[in-house]
Length: 371
Image (cartoon, rainbow, N blue to C red; front, side, top):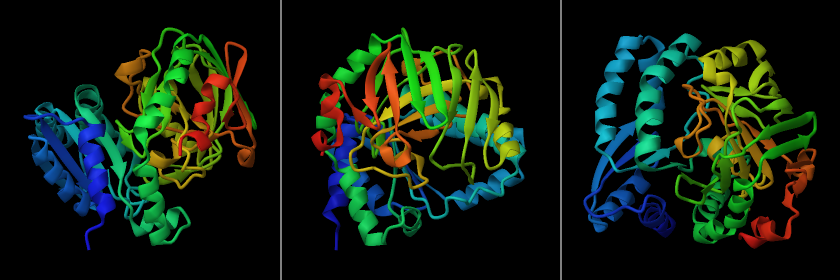
């Protein structure tokens, strides 16, 4: 039986998230799962008078490609993928996680070759700055297991999160955007965390169902050399097939000068990918009312109500702070009482305490007002 929630999600993605127009080209890229949604997207794409293009990929097959690759090989693959991406006006990526650790045995040097010579030229250099794009997950048994839920319960959670009234969230974000755009100094506090930095002159951008599904964040970037202090992330983070925990970063003049984790050697190799990997490319505040705990999936975890993420690596063009890198690693710090609490200060004014906005004009972003 056809699940009407999939049909509604496809309509939302085509008409709201990427706002597809007649004559535009849309690339639908499916990883491992999500064929039902892809079919609905194709139908909605045609209804919009646009042209669907589809690629179906397997993370396991991609792993086999990457494990024994070289720079010339990755550049050859990226060259034709880049040419295709240049002809797209919109992109929807459906990522069904069958095994979040699938890439854990790719050698670091091969992963670096992939990131610099395939992923970056296609996605960081073309898709992100030049298309209307949206990345999303698709519910799988593996994701339900990671979330500690039955498959049925996880599917219900998934569609609650993904079919949220994002237009309502969009309006509620306006006061936070206005405040961030006139803020200079930011201070972040919490358990083993005390960070300061400036966001002066760097635009704040709202994510309300246009770029990711699920969504719910407002992001900007720190002035590159202003980050001082330390942060201890309290959310596990899967990266390149390995789950990092207890990540602690220390900063001086914007640069990560010390990084420790459950695998300190491995994490420092990531931060040695290139010069920009040790600087921050994004600071974001999460507000999705349905996402309240981590599930080791960054598309969900970075939107956790009461969280923030402070991201080493590449800075987005919309709020570019001068930092370029082959990596962009969203690391999440939750400030709700269950995770030790914490505060966000803008120019010495308390903005959020223990995950809840305390300024009257921002109360519209507290969870009970977004559901």
